[in-house]
Image 1: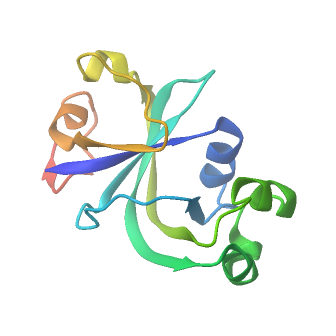
Image 2 (image 1 turned 60 degrees about the horizontal axis):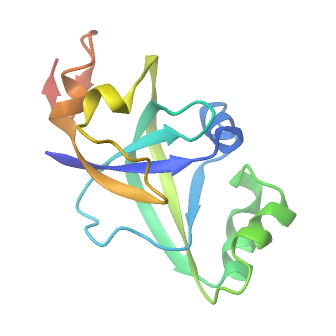
Image 3 (image 1 turned 120 degrees about the horizontal axis):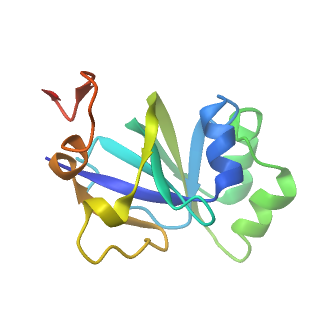
Length: 144
């Protein structure tokens, strides 16, 4: 089973983990939306896979509309939001559902041969990640 690895800045990862950021905003979205496992890669300086969530609704719209609809659960400032979407006519809001933080962040260099942090996202094999999990949580539809 494959999932999606999203590269997210650490300050926004913190907002996701503390529940303030309930939607992840993107200028571009992965084409294959059948992938329901979304892994969070905290970018530099952390450089680890820290959590995963199940893909909820994906809302596409003009940034003004997305801000009005999701500002209270965005986990970002209005200034950061509009700086990110500057010059864009549309964007995406991805609902974060059933968030699970890993007890120990995973090193993607140990998981994937020739790992290069994605600029936005990349597809990953859940099995590669599952093999690194040492607890018994239900993961990628299988028991570890």
